[in-house]
Image (cartoon, rainbow, N blue to C red; front, side, top):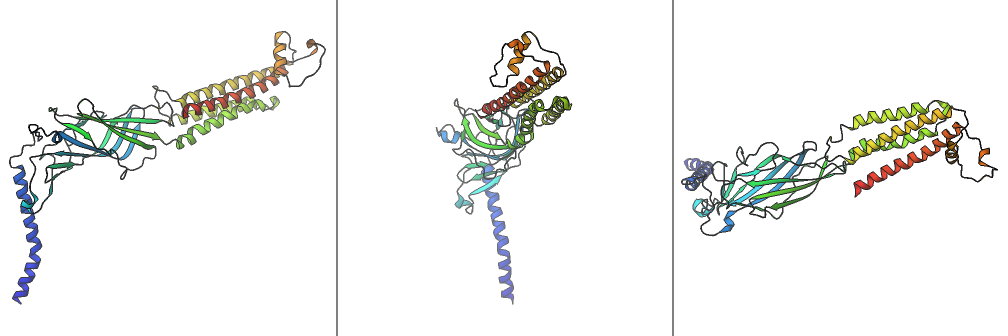
Length: 385
């Protein structure tokens, strides 16, 4: 019975003893590494001529675009930055420490590079100054650090082709160190979308990382994004195009119906009300101005001109006086039906102001549609090219 109890005690106590032993080894390793370690001293050894130890590998992961304010020119995104560097004073032999090949410590324990996002819209602050993300130390002296950030970077917007616009934002990183021996080395694969959360408004087209050619103390992550235009096409462009094509139909209404002016006013007021609603969806910026704004203004002016000619036509239609003088030649052109009729002299033709109104209706109807279709076509050509 005593033997069984002793055996059971040994079995249950073995894991606890192993854990205690590992904790002891970790503690010994920690004390051996940081006994004479000073995090204020740059660990790069510049005396032996090993320039590889001076470089910091930089890799960028985008986790998703949170928001892009075109008016303020601020891009908000969540990202993870992978930094890898060599600290030759933090090396050990795993065989001397129970085959421990790596360990994690807080950022305040070791030296880490002070890298600043120069394009930060809030404040210039080095990575890790308030970071709770720990660093991983390998037995060969290499250190990995994965700080995560919600970045608010300055990015001037170019909404000239809104809502088919593409934006290019540059996240500029800089090594804020007094020593010129510290450089940033972009990793060959700058971007990974494995953990990216897709934005409903923006599509990430491409990434590019460029280091400073004059010393590699700075690095830029160039992000190219494209807006999803479907929402704005349905809500903004389609109703405007429909209203613009409905406007010329006012010239087909009979003058005696009394609905011509009310129809024109209704379309114009509907257009104004819609512009008020659509203005909340269009970025309010003057430099550069959006082609869509120019398109809306031109359509609005054309609608006002259509209403003006409609009022003039109604005024002429009620006048039964005969036209004389040079106005008679203009009326002949407007009232031409396209067929040849033999007349003795031009003076025998009697034309009234009502005929001018009917001729203006046809002329304005055709010219209005030509202008509207041309305006829409030119707008799309500008957006595509």
